[in-house]
Length: 211
Image (tube, rainbow, N blue to C red; front, top):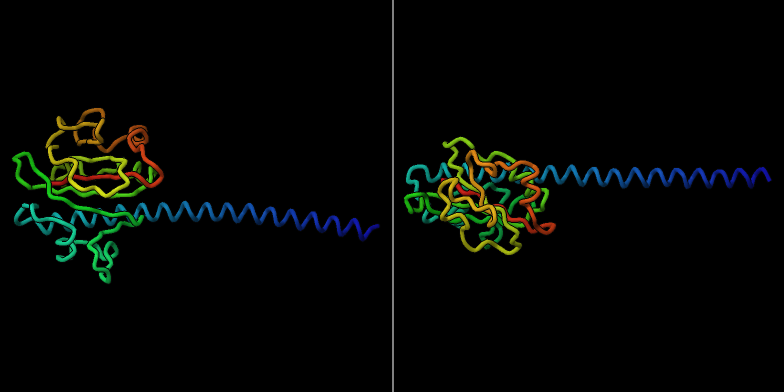
């Protein structure tokens, strides 16, 4: 009888240990997943910051972006090495979350192509929120003028902020946000960002316009 009780108690204890291990494993996986997500988002921001800086430095002498495109940027070495696979024939530029980055020429207030737009495709709502609440360049010297938030899962085929030159051109209903002192000026607040990033799990698109 004593042996039976001890065996029963041992089995219960073993099940308890297994349950604890299971809970710890789930918690560990969740924590790892969250940490990796944060790492990827931070890396995405680093990639874009470097790419934007390289573009502006490459064109600083002529300040004419009419010929800018992914292929040219790859050829002149403006694209960070981890955003492009040189073994592939494709000119796709990929960010840390494995979505596409596309660059277009855009117009300045004089209607000349003295600006460019950069689009980041296929990011999650959480990444979208983090990106639109950060400062991409309040200082005029940064060249940053406006931001686009879209829910397009397909590739962006053309610039969305071509006619955006000042805060008066903002159009939040169409996902166009500008710098300035108005209520919806970028960077957005967390509450504004949560409402603006209305996309499917990986269906957000962010655009940045620079002079």
